[in-house]
Image 1 (cartoon, one colour):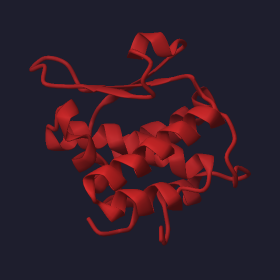
Image 2 (image 1 turned 180 degrees about the horizontal axis):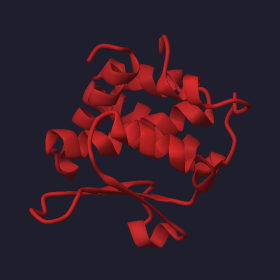
Image 3 (image 1 turned 135 degrees about the horizontal axis):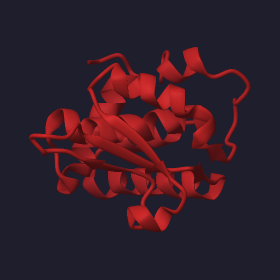
Image 4 (image 1 turned 30 degrees about the horizontal axis):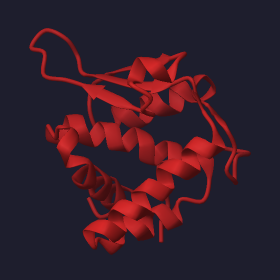
Amino acid sequence: MIEHSFAQDNFKGLTIMDDLQLTEHRSFIERLVGRHITARVKLVPWKAELGGKLGQAHWGSPTELPLILHPECITVAEIEQSLFELALRGRVTGNPKLMEHADEIGSSEQYLEHLVLHEVAHIKNNWRQDRETDCDLWVYAEMHGET
């Protein structure tokens, strides 16, 4: 069970799944990123700019700071689909921590924390797209105070 999360300290009001207007939570996102890495945060108006994804991380340039991108809005349906895919990946790979993590995320703020930390994990650990499970397990450990 998620004992205590960064989101619980920074959100007041959201306690169930609601659409996320990330523009309203930009300072939370930037503080969360800043706890782990130095990176720029950009919110884009259209998910098409992210290839339909809910987040992207770009890093590796010797002259530019890493960049984390998220859409300006994420709907409840998109949150639920993302959590379903996380749980399914846990089932397919035989990793119960992924299924447990997907089940534990019970509010929009916890989901946002997961999503932001997932992109942080890519940059912090230099993990490419084929390391999605590793990123989610890193987030699991971080949100459970295991890091």
